Image 1: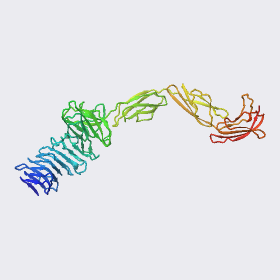
Image 2: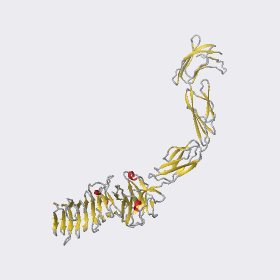
Image 3: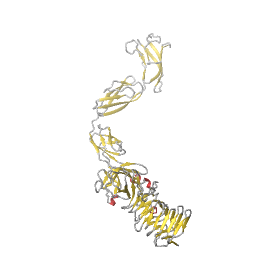
Image 4: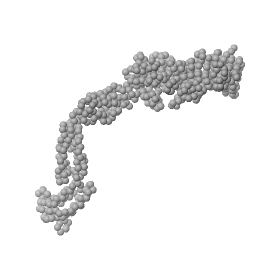
Length: 617
């Protein structure tokens, strides 16, 4: 069934809705008015045409053009809105189109919205090259993300968003792909929010372009204008770019994502200036100042990337500026973030208006680190430090005979050096894998002293030790006896007495003014007690006291008895000794006496004992 409206005036009243069940709604010169609250749904193809007079559709309500089964009408596609010949479509209403938008006539957007809502590929096209200027274009649908069913395609014409003077027109991409092919989508509304898209990671809406195609935006503010560019060719990628002018002048910038290796497009990624070490071969952007003279004004450009999928990058590079036939480092500033990191080039200046300037993510060679060399003593550890970029990885190389003990990968290492001279080198590696030039120093190890000592024990309890230095090439000595006593700095310390039984670590540290060597030895003082059986308290300074010696006594008590069993002396503090006097201070006569010792040791040993002692004056 085909419905034709020939030269008549049709009103769809303000408060009514109408559905035309037709495979083709063909307006051949008629005048159709859709009121502000009316909804007209056409199940099939709609064509606004002209016969003796121009077909006229004035939409102030909502027109829904849905698809049905194939109509059988030549050159028609169900769900398509087609404008031909001298027909006119205008009005501030809503157009909801399930298939193609074909403009071969005149479309006056006013403040209308066109929604392309189909779930298979839709085309915005013209067979005669008519450019559609939309006020608001909205892309919706549920076709699988990243496939042709999510594409709304500018097949053979440019298109524009926001008719001149509008302040509300916008492009709503949602999670769909607007494929401009080799054409350009111009967004003339200078509001920064005039381009909107879904920012859900992995399903962002984007504009894709081929060759000379692009997304163009008019700008006139010092503000961030986003360009949600991407591609579904090969690997689906959403890689946004931002442009921030530094002056509130009228410019037009265009951006395109080339979702391929730049070399295949004639931008050889192996040709780069000396500050670059690698370039991103997955994609690059083309950025163009299409309108406006920079003079002294510049802009910041920011390129986003997914570090997980794309790797890490430090800079941006531009083809042919300033040196022809190579990529030149723009000295960008990287920012790591999730899910998208970015690199910014501030005060970017493009003097070649009208040229699509290739911009690619790059890896920048770090400067060689600054290496601080230190004196090294043969056979000993030495610390070396390099100053470089924050977050860099450092690679240290030692000569034969030396080895990195710890710190490899960091800017500070400990190296054990042998006796041979050699070159120590270090490089730093950036997050993108770029390696710097080498920093190095020639290291000549200094001769080290060799620490050594002998020990000998003496005394009744073998607790008095003598230490004899046997070191070579030493000029200073430092002894630690391991029992908490003060250190000794003499070469051969005086005899050292250990007060208690136990195991002690003796340390000798020797130097020759620069190098140091250390040796440690353990000595063991055993639990011993010495009890004499005779003493001569005649005040000649020889054996004047009955003196019980031990190296583990903690608590003790000594009792002395005469031959008749009378206790004549007792002591429980100080030293365990008896001077031959009674507790009253009288000299005891020569003879045999009996003693009892009650004693506990620090080590938990009991030293209780008794016996006889002879007093001889």
